Length: 68
Image (cartoon, rainbow, N blue to C red; front, side, top):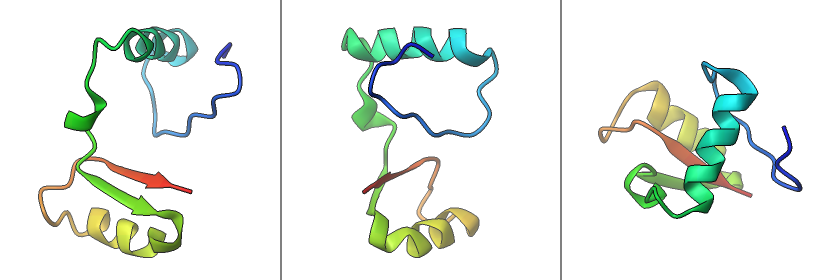
């Protein structure tokens, strides 16, 4: 997708590569505060708890970030 050494894993993205490329440009230009979107951050070792939280829709979860 022309994103260099970045790896992006996500659910379905309507618009495919072009939309993802535009979103990355917005992020790189600091026009979007991702801190407002990520409400739950988990270590990879805690992935089971992250999936459990999302599966049961607790704590108003919308998105979860998992950091290796």
